[in-house]
Length: 140
Image (cartoon, rainbow, N blue to C red; front, top):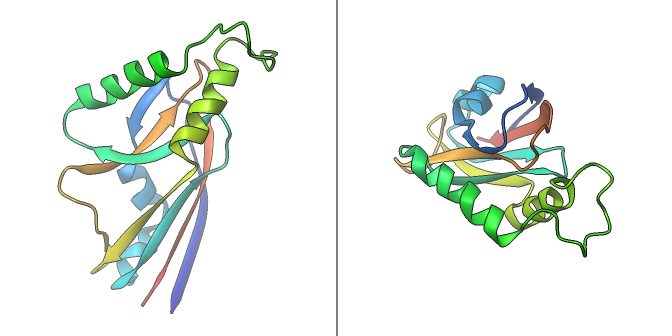
């Protein structure tokens, strides 16, 4: 069994849904040493999240942003946690809805995602800053 792990950081991105699959595989090139295994990508933040979805048509990512902004609106007077701005509490809720990690099978040294799948960084803050990740791969 081989186990590899890397901590890496991505530069600040604007609010929205961003493909980061290439940056994840770049951060842990040892994935190519695993024939059969798993890869976990974990984001170390509470106001951004990760998911896997459509990697070709950018309007899918735009529609994700539109949907979550409708589902979890800003400026709700019932929010108590608002010290960091009107986007802060909604960002925490969206991050919990989406999740802080994704698991992807590894097959023949590559992430075994479908043709149209990619890893999304879901940035829920207007100014979230750089984001830190831990990527771990293990297998034979």
